[in-house]
Length: 246
Length: 228
Ligand SMILES: Nc1ncnc2c1ncn2[C@@H]1O[C@H](COP(=O)(O)OP(=O)(O)OP(=O)(O)O)[C@@H](O)[C@H]1O
Ligand SMILES: [Mg+2]
Image 1 (cartoon, each protein chain N blue to C red):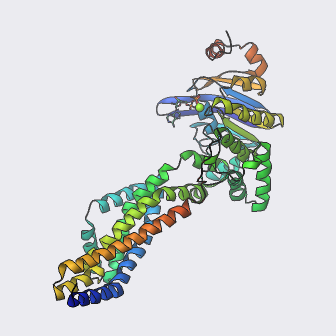
Image 2: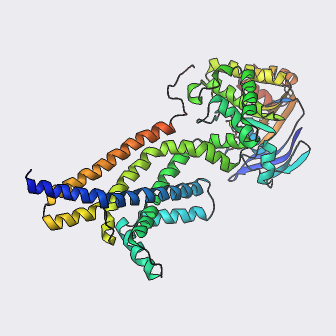
Image 3: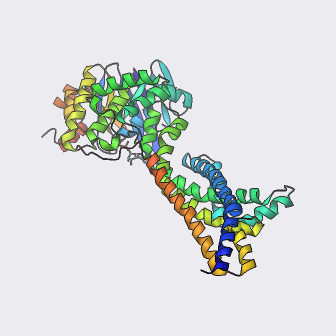
């Protein structure tokens, strides 16, 4: 479904991604974890061209993209089939919840307005916000905004959705509603690559864990096994540090 | 007020409103409209960090903000004929005011564009929209909302700055008042009258600002319900 090979990225003289190889299969829910600054966000951003990798290739839907050289047209084509959910929601402030979801359908997909509105309402219903369709982002709680952002992504029926710490900007009591939506999404078979600090999510919802440190993938295993008995000392230390192991 | 003075005021007022006001308004409205277009383009060029054009924009802003408006007005009026372009005083004034106001307003627009969180642009790109579409539909409408108070500040100063055009023979409200003063020696009364007229125009524009703000704020949801 999506395969990254030898992705490298430097900011100034700091090499943030040092040759990442990562394969995501159809229906996979991959939890990407690791200490702060290890390059998780940068990896997601490189995969969606929000950041230009210096080196590396990506195979997606049978097409090969040379990451540093991909043309703007190919980028847009690739983005037609991916979703991105940001830590800070990034809803369009001048659009209602419904407008946030229809915007991409109407403008990028050239869908007719009525059809887009139907599709968007369906997506809002899936995240439990059908009653909030006409509210602006400023009138929604953080948890609701993030659920609208998820609706915005799923309405485009992407092949894969990237999540960058979708719950870490939320008040604790709002985290559950967003994780619940993501769990439903995972159970519906959506392919997801999720950067997260929520170990419950990584343990219970994801089927694979990718542990990154210092711009490299240190360990990559089935979630259950990873949490029961990480192979690498670094992963053991990390889990201990965040209180997942004694 | 005695009858003679009343007669002078009445005549001057009629003259200023009939002959001067249309010129002042024409200069203001046309120049400001062109300035807004210049400002938006110059700001967008910088916001998108386009090479070369960004440097040109900075140079333009540096040049215009660093020289007096009156000098710019005189240069346009006298320089263009020197290179073979014969131009009337009013179009010359419009060119000078547009270029001048464009430089100031472009800084307002640039700051306003920057005030829209870059995450919204990224989100737009991620749903497959082109950069241009994201700008037109998401970023610029929000930036305008931020820019309106400052843009109206500029507009109101500009109304008053148009009085400089008498220096290049344009007959505006100021020029006509000056003529009446020259004939009647009623300095104080006539200049106070002129001041009141400028004040009336500015007041109208302030009211226009309210309307513009209300229009641009129509779709952000005013009553903020916090559910959290
Ligand atoms: N635009 C940028 N310019 C310069 N350095 C950057 C930029 N973005 C990220 N970095 C640096 O790259 C490194 C990796 O950052 P990244 O955001 O990918 O880490 P992360 O694993 O997502 O961390 P966190 O868990 O804190 O979100 C950090 O040292 C960061 O300071
Ligand atoms: Mg991050």
